[in-house]
Amino acid sequence: MIFSLASRILRTVDPKCLANVAWNFGFKGARSVMLYKKRMKQGIHFPPFLYISILNSCNLRCQGCWVDVEAPRNAIDLDTLNRTVNDAREHGNSFFGILGGEPFMHPELLDFLAQHPDSYFQIFTNGQLITEKVARALRQLGNATPLVSIEGSSTVSDERRGNKDVLNRTLRGLQNCLEQKLLTGVATSLCKTNIDDLLNEVWLDKLISMGVHYTWYHTYRPVGPKICGELALTPEQIKDVRRFIVTQRAKKPIAIVDAYYGHDGHSLCPMATGISHHVSPGGDIEPCPIIQFATENIKDSRGVYETFTSSAFLKDFRETAAQHTRGCIVLERPDLVKQLAEKHGAKDTTQRQTAMAEIESMTPRGSQWIKEENIGEIHWMYWLAKRFFYQDFGVYQKDTTR
Image (tube, rainbow, N blue to C red; front, side):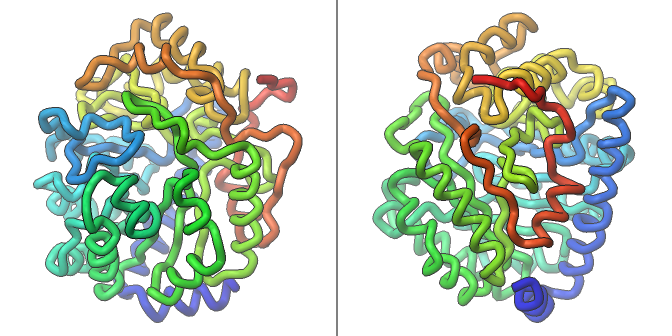
């Protein structure tokens, strides 16, 4: 599997793009995790991976979306983006996730990427605005990988994403990326209406035949103003997702990403471990994208590193989450999210200003943490990568209970 995947990537990715992913994401990304672990021992927490929602606007209206896509545009300006990345890079960071809304609606996205050739960016996108011209520009820059979201069949995609002909328009953007030899991924938020279509070998084989290099399975998070709780997976389905990913990683020549488990199968939360936090379209520093409360902003004159590392709010969130669950604190304990926001006087970072009411209305439900079963990695490559670079970093208490 690993040799077939490596061969496929070498044959189908532009050499400049390949060199950048190997150096800026591979080597320097690993180094940033090592620096994070070193800082942790000193009681300093600055995430090695920052996820930045650069604007709220989007051309789709997905079920369960928590972003203010229908509100007036709120975007982080180019100077602030540059200052944030430069400050983070000075402290060892080289990888940044770029989210929205739809990132390609930001008028300065390509200018932003062009000013950071020594960093690597993963762009979460619906793909519909990636024209041939945009794809060529990304190839010339060589420092970004588009992660294109596909949510099911034609019918399911239209229903899930609130528009018509969604799948075909997304596939056109995906094809433009592949034709320009970009390292390209496909992401799916698994829910009850698409799990049967997309969590199977037939779908993986189709992605491989198209030339896709990696895929990322998320599980649908019922949060926000329109929760759509009926889409949430059952505990048994969540276990099926984990079993499938671990099994297929050892079989298929396509990289499969997940964000919720370590090498030994123990669940984790990236926010609780401190390996990643989120910046909102308004520049607010949130524990994670679905916790829309903050006490700090990247526009703070202190600089992003000092702002992050001195935040009592983020520290309390990490520690509280790790003390109470190995899963998602928002889904399992919305009452704790409310308590922490009130304790720190955190502001609602949404334009709709209903984040607290949304948390109060939530019914606790399960997440990725299933205490009865830990499904460890089978393939040695994933086992080693997670063992050394993506783990719980010892933040969880052994007596963690629901």
